Length: 165
Image (cartoon, rainbow, N blue to C red):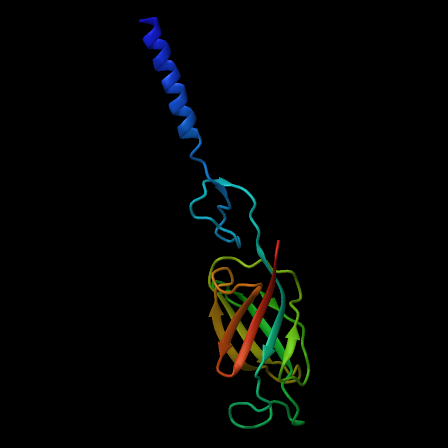
């Protein structure tokens, strides 16, 4: 009888040991670049942070065919963007004057999250109201690869560059 109890205790301990080995390590944060839906023990998450935004294909004329600026130069470009749930735009870039292709830099470090974001690309003349050049939405965690999220909006190509850490 003692021998069967001992075997039963050893079997139960082995079974518990096997059940405890089912934990899969990985990143359990859905906002992370390396999210693992099968992981149940959180470890090693890395996130996407905005670095620069490359813009190309912007016409020197607005949709009416008139120059963006009164002096006939290209538009003064700024990008506003943020989470779609926000009433406004959470973030903005620096302003680049008289450009049709440019690299814009966000005014702060931004951690992208796994949800819909919106963007507004504008001609910001400072003295008059801004004119919208392009708008749209994107998911910065589900879209992109190789450290860039590419968006095409008509002839305009927008590349949200990011670092991962």
